[in-house]
Each structure stands twice: as structure tokens, then as C-alpha cells.
Length: 309
Image (cartoon, rainbow, N blue to C red; front, side, top):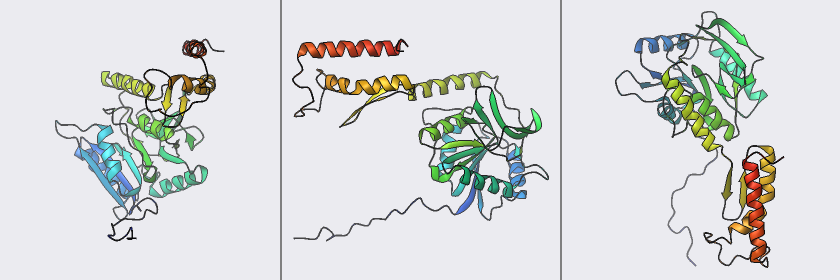
């Protein structure tokens, strides 16, 4: 018998993620080269030198603009740093304040606290009405709110640290310059990672702009996308039917319905791909099936209307 390796085909054995050859990648969207140069000088003076850090930028100085979602996705994919810092061009390290050494220490602390952290920042939201902050900006100097590090659901975009080995990316169906950190935090959560505000103090020169029409439009855009992404749904695999729902009671009822719905759905006129498969309860009469379908529809209708208790 001929050997299966008679003509060897090159293959590379995977032993883990490709090793990063930099400590930090610092990526920025640039509209003002002077601001960007001052930011880089500030970081280099604070220890983020080109010996083991790289600086990447997206040039938005012209009329053609690259949005944060697509531009920073390129930065994440091109980064060679173990950590990728996504920051605004107007952040500055503070004289006699935190430096590279403090950030290294805070990230080491996070590693010990939660091996599943993926994103860290200096400002974010914990719960309705509750923020976590460590920042100086036009809203206040030397702000320190919360017991840090604090796990959060979203981050402000001025300064974000992303673990490269978490393999995160921004949504491809969103655009603009608002809520992209919120999007990344949601994606991290779906993938099993956590997000934190850490005690790393720097200055952000801008107060932000949450009253513009564009901000309101992007807010509705991200609400629509994630309401769609997290909607309750039926998932049909080639060998199982799953009901997914984030609300505990509806999830329990959906789980109980999986068996009956699977039997019914595979007998419906639109069913396909199940030829030759004998299903449990094949002896069920048509009348029984009609009754089962009717009761299932009624129950799902009640659940959808919030009537199930």
C-alpha cells in the first residue's frame, strides 16, 4: 500500500498564539498632528519608549475619514504588542503622576485578580448611575471614583488597554466615532472576557461631546445592533435544537419546549434534511401533533407577551 505521506505537504504545527515581540502597541486616530506629537512625547517620557513599544496611527487629517470601528480593527490586527493601547491624541501623562511602571504594575495586578480580563481603562460604567473613574479632565482634576480595579460594562474611549491574546475586534456592522469601546466591551463579554477600570491616572484634555446629533444617532445604532444580536432565538444545529434567551424564566420554559418543538418542526412541510431519521414519538397521531403544536404556540405567545409567571 502506498504511504499517505508519499508527497509531503508542508504544514506548521500550532503551539499557541504567535509571540508578541513588543510590550505595547499604542494606536491612535489622528486629526491634529501637533496633538499627536505631544501625546507621543508624553508617553515616551513616561517610559513607553520605542525600545519595546510601537506607535501606530490612522491619518484622519484629510477629508476622507476612517471611522473608529474599522480603523482600530486594523490596528488590533496589525499590532505586535502584548497589550494594545487605543487612545485619543489628546491624552497626556501627568508630571509626577503615573508612568509605564504603574501601568505594568496595574496589569500584573489584574492578571492575578482575574485571568479572564481582556480590556482595561481609566473610566467606565459599573451599573445604572454608578461610574468608576481615575482621570483628570475638564470635568474635574484627580478624579478617583470606586474601589479600583472595578469590573465594568463599558469604558470611555480616551484610553483603553486591550490584551492582544484575547483576539478581540470591533463590530463590522457599526461605524462612527462613538460607543466603539462599549461595543468592544460587549464583544469581550460574549466571548467570555471581562473589562475593568484600573487605577492608572492620566489627563484627557477634552470633555467629550455627548450632545451632538451624531452621538444620538450612534447611540440608537448600537442599541439596534445589540438588541438584534442578543435577541431570544431558536438555534437548529445538525443534531440538536436549542432555545437561547437571557431572561432566566423564559430560558427555563424554552428549555422545556426544546423536545416538543424539535419533534414538531421536523415534521412540518418546510422541514428538510431529516430523511431516514426516526424521531421519538413517531407513533403520535396527527390530532396529537396538532394539539401539541397548538399548546406550544400558546405558551410561546404568553412568554413573548410577558404573561408567563
